[in-house]
Structures are given as structure tokens and as C-alpha cells.
Length: 238
Image 1: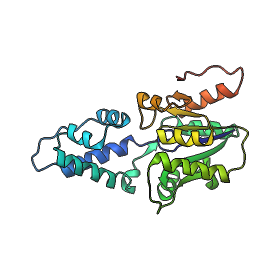
Image 2: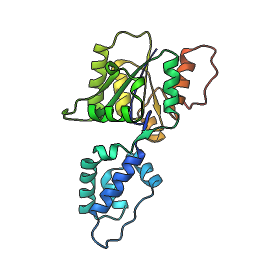
Image 3: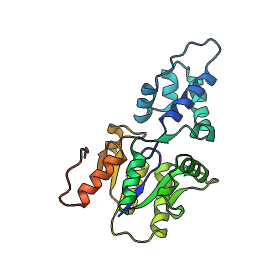
Image 4: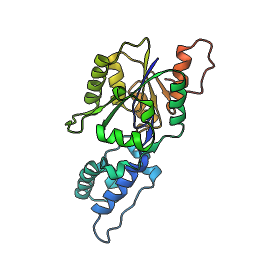
């Protein structure tokens, strides 16, 4: 059994990083003595998961139109800086699920829009490298010029399909439309998870094969689909 999993969302919680960057960009953009309405982390993350645009998030925080544009650009320039990426932490239960899969002999492949340096830093800092052999890590080169995730990720999948040995059965787990596009391009079933940057309404609209709360729930669903007689997990499907 091969499991191809996205990194941010199924394995890593990026909400702390995104919120700290939001706070920084808001503070940098506001005028001296300007009254703003800083969103709580929950409010902010709910907007991000609903795909509300950065400019609108800036406006809802009390910035004017021009400031909101600057806020949006500063966010894009800042969110992938290594000082902030070190704020990412494993999703609760993700490491235990990877340990479970490894003990069952599953082949684990990570496929992410992170660059090599960004993935390597997180794998080492969070002791996740043990789960993914170097030849099973698919990410962007440090000098890669990004286009759109929904285009770039299927390209990673095409490379994986060329390089990986044939597997009797493969599944994918991800949290965005880019993951679903990549899985569809290879004819691989995909379980979307709600532990990432898309809420249920958004994720459901992209039509994954199933939706689970997290990586553990996704694995339970996959086991149910592939093992007759297994108990049905507490997983919501489409």
C-alpha cells in the first residue's frame, strides 16, 4: 500500500505561522495611532479556510483600500520566510498515525509545495525525516518559479509517477484543491482533510472521494475501503 500525503495540513499545522504573519503585516501597514480591529486567531483562520482574499482580510481589520493592498503584498513576501516557518508544528495525532502506517509496512510518500530547504527544515526539526525516504520526498526546487499550485502539484505527481516503482494500490491525502487536482491527474483516490487550510464547504466543492477530520481519520477511511470486515471509522464521506 502506498500513501501519498501532502505535508502542510495533513501533517503540519501552519495556522500559528499564518496568524503571526497576519499580526506582523497588520502592525507594519497601519498608520501611527490608526485604530484597527485585529482579528482573533480563530476569526482569522476561519477566513483563511474559507478562501477570503488577503485584501479583504486587511479591510476587515480596519485598513483602507490602499493599505489593504500593501498588507496583502507584504503577507506574500513574508509568509514563507524561514523565521516564520519555524512556527509550524505537527498536527495532533499526525506523528502517531505515521508511526502506525510505518509499522504496517506502508510506503509513505510526501508531496508538497514547499521548497527543498523548507521541507528539510521541518522534517529535521520535528523528527519527521524517518517516515519519508529521500527518494520519496517530492517538493519544489529552491529556485523553482511557482505558477499556480493547481498546476505545479500535478507536475510533481507526474514526476512521482515516472520515478516511483509500481504499487498495487495508492491513495492520496491532502487539504486543498491542488492535492485533488494532482490525485485526479494520476487516477488516484484522495481523502481531503479538515486539519488544513480549507473548510468543509470549500473542500467539498472540489469533490474529493471522501472528507475526514485529519490524517488519522483519512487512514481509517482508507483501511475501511481496502479491508473487508474492518469496523467503519467515524469519518464523514461525501
